[in-house]
Image (cartoon, rainbow, N blue to C red; front, top):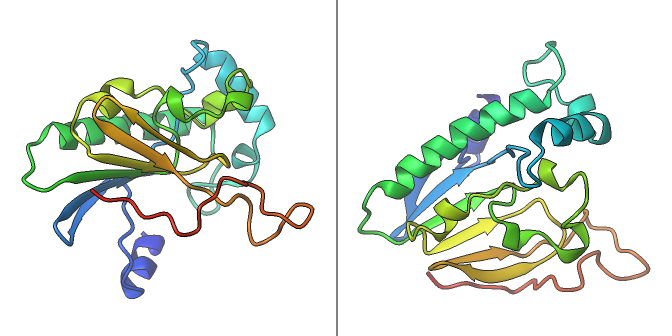
Length: 185
């Protein structure tokens, strides 16, 4: 709630399972935490993530409460996925853009991470939703590798620079980052 109030004060739309129509485009936004199932072993993937990710060491969803767990994020994923499926099933006269933090489709996983044991903590297989035709464009983040592809009739785009303002050896982390990328809907 505090983040929503701050965003509102700044004139920013914080889309946590929420939508907004801007300039004749319908935006659906959610963090879309993962279901840990993309490798087919969700229980194992949850255990690996619980021990391997700082999210599960340092994030406390309720101030002063217990730490975040993979079960928490699966529950949030399930809620967000249901919300998103319902919204994408609604007819809209406006073109629809979905914005998520986590990766929604196997096509977004960089080749070097496809078999990585932590990949299920970042990506889910929502192929049916992505390819279902409800969205013209799906923009996501979290990964540090660019992608731009068609999944069914939906264009999926991720254009990350990588970590912060720093460079690695005088160059930014993601050499494929396009600082002037513009997409049409």
